[in-house]
Figure 1 (cartoon, rainbow, N blue to C red):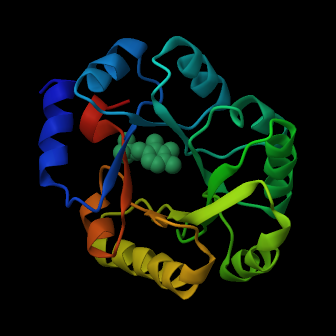
Figure 2: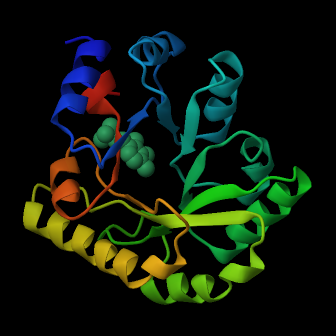
Figure 3: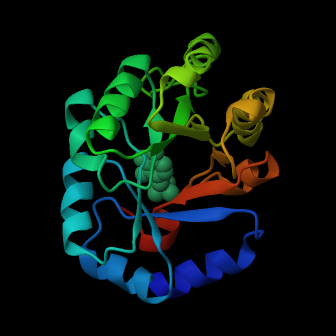
Amino acid sequence: MSVTQQLLTLKNTLPESVTLIAVSKTKPKALILEAYETGHRDFGENKVQELTSKFEQLPKDIKWHMIGHLQRNKVKYIVPFVHIIHSVDSKRLLDEIQKQAKNVNKRVAVLLQVHIAKEATKFGLDQEELEDVLKLKEHYTHITFKGLMGMATFTEDSEAIRSEFSFVKTLYDKHLGSWEKDPILSIGMSSDYQIAIDCGSNMIRIGSAIFGHR
Ligand SMILES: *Cc1c(COP(=O)(O)O)cnc(C)c1O
């Protein structure tokens, strides 16, 4: 199936409450434009250089989501245009986003990434770190806290995935009062988005199921 067909077929199956991010990392501009022509506007990238170069070359009404691990020295390149940063995994990164957002006189929307997977290689805050950061929320005058993001363990064991997603949903609900309007729970990728939606996801990040294997 073409990108257009995959995207439209997938969208047809999603509940209205779920926003689809088309993860276009490693994919050429032509394929992004094909998805754009269907009316789709939310795209996700995981590398700063690729994100900024695609931003420069593609239509300006695209909403760009930064979904990959973000180094502090690169924050300044994306703050001026990024729609949401999904992958905030430390207080030091928040401090840098606050500083750069202030510089350009903008409020930046972020999700706090929670470490839910078994793999040590995946990034994210643990529960205690999350709660410490949220205590300082008022200090971040140029950051809008929209909710949480999580990545489940890469496994065939759907019950294990379900329990990880349920854990992040519990944290999301516990701190519902911290999220600004239209809060976001960003969980679910090509292989596990149905479980994520069952667990309360309202934003899924889908790459290979739209654009094919990388
Ligand atoms: C690549 C990536 C995705 C999409 O993965 P697929 O399995 O291709 O759907 C989602 N979230 C993050 C953080 C990613 O890096």
